[in-house]
Image (cartoon, rainbow, N blue to C red; front, side, top):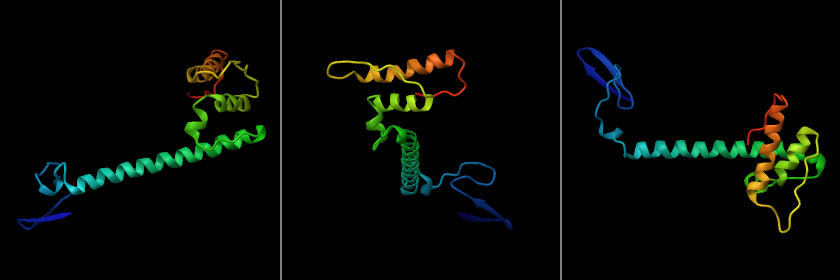
Length: 134
């Protein structure tokens, strides 16, 4: 904070703005100043931390639902990317068995993600209120 004395009144200028909202040209609030760069890096670090907490929380939630079928994921992004665990999770949540695709060496990533999408669309048409976002 910076205090200015002007004719017996005190105006407080915070982060380059005076009390009337006018932008003042302060050198310390330059776009590339160390304070500005620190602020941006801190915001990025907090966003990354929040994402990691959400990933960990969602992983625990998924594992709690996959526990009855003896499945567990360790890395949410890697274990869910082929779609097998996602289909397994959908089966547990819906209580229905989804048809399994049979292939030779394995199915493509798009096939695994397309199957849950098809199931979600089918359920929306059937009037399901709860929806799984893909």
